[in-house]
Amino acid sequence: MEKSRVFYTNLRTRAGLGLLDKLGHLMDAAGIGAIDFKDQFTAVKLHFGEPGNMAYIRPNYASVVVEKLKSLGARVFLTDANTLYLGLRNNAIDHLRTAFRNGFNPLQVDAPVIIADGLKGTDSVVLKLAGAKYCPSPKIGRAVADADIFISLTHFKGHEQTGFGGTLKNIGMGCASIAGKLELHSSSKPRISTRRCIGCKVCEKHCNYGAVKVNSERKAVIDYDKCVGCGQCVALCQYAGAVLAEWDTSEILNYKIAEYTKAILANRPHFHISLIMNVSPNCDCWAHNDVAIVPDLGMMASFDPVALDQACADLVNRAPVINDWCGDPECGCHEGSDDRYQKESEDKFKMIHPDTDWSAGLRYAEEIGLGSREYELVEV
Image 1 (cartoon, rainbow, N blue to C red):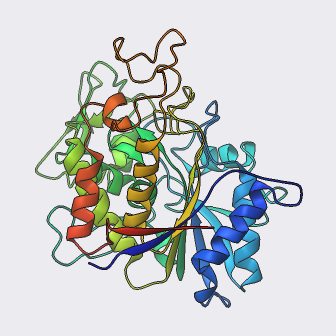
Image 2 (tube, rainbow, N blue to C red):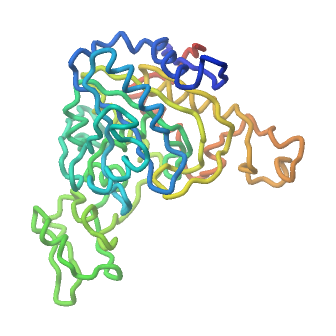
Image 3 (tube, one colour):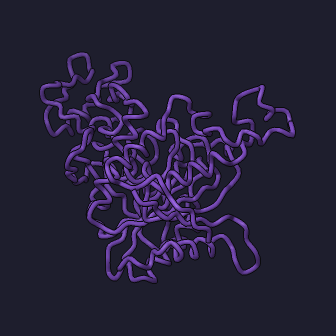
């Protein structure tokens, strides 16, 4: 496969050339102007950050992206889908409040925020994916599915299930509806935690298939002959009484994310930006963030999401480890040693999450034609 072009700018600035200026120049150099945005509904997919987490992308950067797209004639909106887990982004009301609280509001970013899968995470569209091994019918938030053009703006960081959270995860996992997230995380249907279930009957009332009933002991019971695994009960339960039965392996999760991403990007223009800053060890979904594992490294953009993720991973893995993240007392990174930055060739993501395999997802993404892991890095 032909090498893809990935454009990179470092974080050095000077008077008259700040980081926001550099982001605009990066987008121009990477060729975003080649897309015809005139009057096209354009989704900018990003993570609004869980309250308490400070590693998420600052709205200032989103504002630059919005201004650029609007100057090209786009009808822009910011979007993300609701979460499967309980938190302050698992329904549109709390999700919008979180987005506004973290600065993604009309005063800071001149674009509306639309939660992709609606009020309760059930407003989705099935996008058929021919030849898929794992997810032939990805379930995508309707606002994303209806967009004419798709732009991703990603905070590149570590992730406890996929190794790192990059462009593919931002798209494939981030655009999935509640039912889609259930499919991505688990190959089995939900189960009821009788210890947590309080018998409130919310799951029973809202199950479209009549599969959930509360018994005489005030505990929900799932009839698996009727259950289709849509995840509605998981989404609606406020007590974590309806939960995933099993979690898929890191490799299979990454394969599924690649398939979801392919379905989302098919048949429409798309462009991708990744900020390799505050590379925290875990996802921005947590209500806190730990210190970064490497220094802030730069910004990248590409039309190829696979090449972009590979380039970001390579950049991080070549960078020095900071803050004792290697966990090896013999390596010299502890106690202020002069050798504390010498773990440059180690896979940082395997270091912090040994049970994950991020490269499996990129290999599979390349195999299904989503993009190329071979890239040419163009410095801006």
